Length: 540
Ligand code: F6P
Image 1: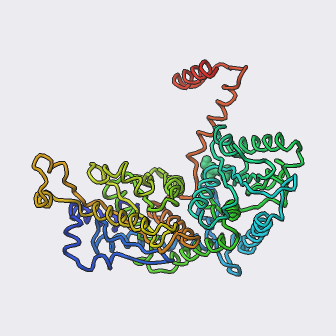
Image 2: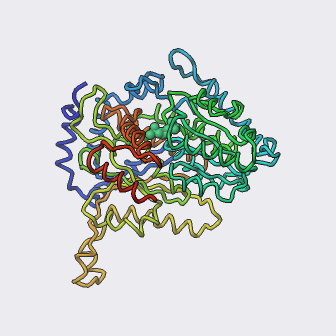
Image 3: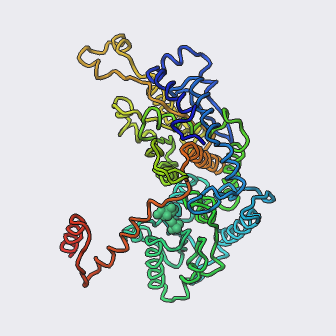
């Protein structure tokens, strides 16, 4: 394969960008009445309007040519076939198998993994049904009403995001809390006011070695045993989700409450594996399966839809367009739904841990930009905070905007207000306000320069009928596959995360240096030594 920046499509895109970089969305729309229709696509219940992007038909043609030259569909097929495309860890990447319908066949090393997936799903469903009905009780015979998920990164962000997103579908008589941070305040606040006799802890960790999670799990055990007065209570108040079953057994969690998954599921791609146990406990097995069906519908769409009408392909290529040709450093994700408040945080790990790489699959340092910084907030909150910079700042910030036609609350009029804001913001960002328009409105001379809105700020609009389990699954899968497309273009391993290792190792070295009583001599750099010394002095 030719080096990315020397490839014909890349070269052509570079020349094309020079030609159209100043074209304004006002002109692009004025010149092409069919633009909105032409630059839109639909799949798995999601509608994507990408017409408010700084592209022409030629841009799209060249981006699709780039995908072709980079073998994106070939790599996609290799992923779906269970090939070990995570080369640095020599692992298959098969989150699509987690939502494959019963009876489909997906092989890793010659063995079909789908029956195992459904075995775990069935076990989770059985556990969830017993717990939700009150048949599964705690150590004292009381019904479990509180669920505390202990996990971090992919073992936290997906479950918390999904719980918040699908709360209207959850059992409102139950309380769900999430502990991730090793800061004891996180555990303390999450358990404050909970009756231990009614509380289940789910220790979620792919590796079952993560410092934060293991520390919080040990704290939880001490908390529970302290409150209920017996070690035997652990069996009835702990469940575990992990690929490391020996680790779980050693911790002492009942194998009957232990749910496994596999090394071909990346942590940040695991919210629909057993890591989603808290989600299933909240919304029930049927809704959980509906969510999996949504994921699967998007998997099918990505696998079969022609590239020009393929949502993840389009979204991924547009990210590359702004990232590599316009030099945009970030991508904003603005859900117009209070329920999706944690989606940006979830997508941060998904995208940045996947595509924040500076070395390609051959181990060569790349000479182009890779993954953008992902950030965002629910839409109308953002409007009263950072949208000023989006509208009038000096940086180009492409944004994905996400909205739903049906509200989840009975306050229907408020939903119209919310959606009016969504549509208005995308319109304002694209078309802005000219000096002439301001003059015609009678805006005073001295203010006019400050009120001009240049526009030409690109957005993708993702619309769905309603935020329900099916839609959430499709939406998450859309982003998973968009991340895949970007990684395939950049020829990086989107499924490893070596960059997190050094910090973990250094923390392990520093931990004993902070222990009370023994304060060994420090041999770090001068700054780290001074900071540790100051901490030792001031902590009291
Ligand atoms: O430190 C990063 C990471 O390894 C993520 O990739 C992962 O999602 C998270 O830590 C948690 O890991 P685990 O599920 O093994 O506890």
